[in-house]
Length: 326
Ligand SMILES: [Zn+2]
Ligand SMILES: [Zn+2]
Ligand SMILES: [Zn+2]
Image 1 (cartoon, protein in one colour):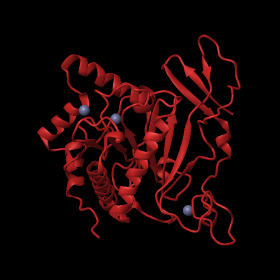
Image 2 (cartoon, rainbow, N blue to C red; image 1 turned 180 degrees about the vertical axis):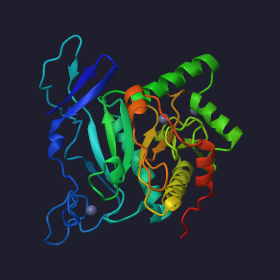
Image 3 (cartoon, rainbow, N blue to C red; image 1 turned 90 degrees about the vertical axis):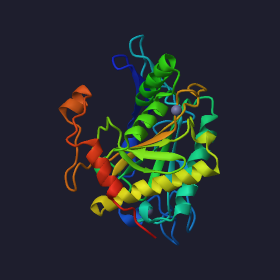
Image 4 (cartoon, rainbow, N blue to C red; image 1 turned 45 degrees about the horizontal axis):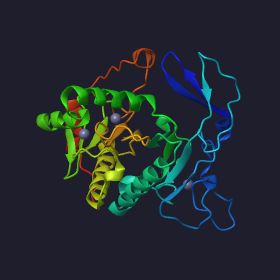
């Protein structure tokens, strides 16, 4: 059972997906559904002895192309809708214990190419308004399958967090004639204290307004609304800076650093070319080597984040942390 329920108070859709209760939860390693199917072993999601990068549709999707009618009847106050969309899984490597920061540059290039391909293909579907590419990494952020993978949700609407950003950027454009994200990047580059890494096409920084101590955003240096506008140079430069940031994260305390990674770019409903700006946001839950940041009263109940660290200091720590070599 899956449907969209409208929350008129927060003005956003909630997806119910009760069938997801049955999904695979922390399986023993011999029964990982994301590993290649071994000889004589139980069949996994990938019927091959080995693979490079794989994309397939999620077996327990929150959104489906042929979504059933809502199981409940809505009202004027509480509209309901079919949970139409597509959920895909991206397997980064066939290695169950693989660690992306130790993977070669070429694998990151392939990954960015896969993201671009999926963004374009899913975005062309008329019921898809937003292609959201993300990764949950580590048990600390609720990962149930340890095998390195990311996900793609193709939503039938622009999700609220992203809509809020885009509304701000559109208003800013109307007032100043500039893209808000271009201005944020200029401000960060002008100050310089929060920059973590950069190359010809991208800049990574801990934003002035970071909500998590080690929050990093990677912005396209040029006003590129989405992956669609990426050429070979941008693909390679994104692969490069992505690998650098993940290596710095893993090298910071010497263990694979958990995070939520979210890619924000132009909606695929045709809107926002002037005021959408490709960027990636990382939200790591650790605030020190062994302390996690929990969303508590002020964050969860009031939406106001309290951060016990200075973005300038955390950026310096990350800047001074060497990426792995080799
Ligand atoms: Zn596996
Ligand atoms: Zn811009
Ligand atoms: Zn964003």
